[in-house]
Image (cartoon, rainbow over all chains, first blue to last red; front, top):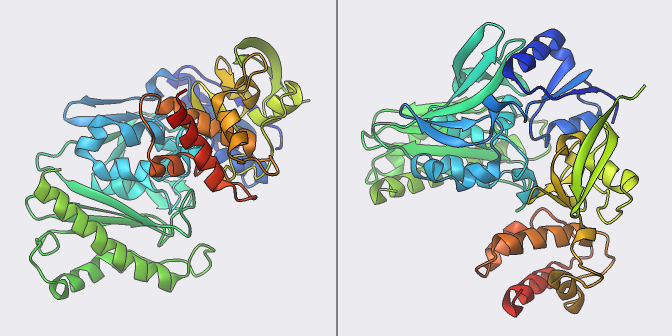
Length: 287
Length: 159
């Protein structure tokens, strides 16, 4: 690994000041499961690494406040997968967190890291999109909330401004419960990155939300308000054209090593139907 | 000049204070500075698990942690499993079941198995739980069945 300065701020103000001062020469270190790989292979070569794990405002933990579930930025996947609030309100987020990497990775990888890296294959992204999550960003100009949908630009690029740091992820607890399911396809069981990662959520008003990643430069959210997708009695021939429209946002790269575009597009349709069926079942079962 | 940082870590029950370079991984420091060579350097991307150690009760790939990050933490390496020269039950079970062939991955396998047994202290883990719990440790000798048998033997034999 090349050398770099290491900073471990204990206050948010200090962290924001460091990020603003160093701009692109700084990298934020949370779990490190992506960053340290990149520091070692040289694809990231910051002058300074800012470890944010000792800042109180980013502390790991999940609580309910003002009709929202708030997940501290440095909360790790292991804790999200097992959290009672997440399991009750956002089952697909718990499922996605449970399949990130291996135990060792999930013990370290944070939710904020997963989305701030803006990997198209980020497993929590589709679930956060379906459940309408936002990030709380603290920066030189103060605090702002950015919906996860507005955060992603493309691989490695977000709409966070210079000096901005994600302190928490918030998910609104909906008046109409969203029954959700996450599914993914990998080359092998274990800790491979997803070739397709997808979440479907349905609610009692008949709205269906489907978000999918690893089939384009960023995860995409599509919503069907016709009620057809959520209708358990509707035939596949009726749902099919709507699903085609839902998946119109997919544009898998022909250069990816994990899977070819044809395979990904085919699996997207299979997984979409599978997740939809599970979400409908969960809605009916009151899960 | 490489900047160093003072850290304090409890290593296998013993408090240690030392200086580490900011860019040195926890694995580098465990092997080179502490002289504990159980944890192995292998894939360096968090896929093989040969460098698995336990930090504050949880397994991590020590190749993906900077040493300076664990300041204040409690660290357990494979060297900390045996007590007074007596192997821990999981270590003995690995030997009894023939789970050790070349041995390279075994320190990491043992740490994951140990963490799994602690997590399921009051119940028997299911086969699926064992497989998921051990999925972050690869064995090129292919001893997965024997490793699984060893874990089951410990849960059945009393701990």
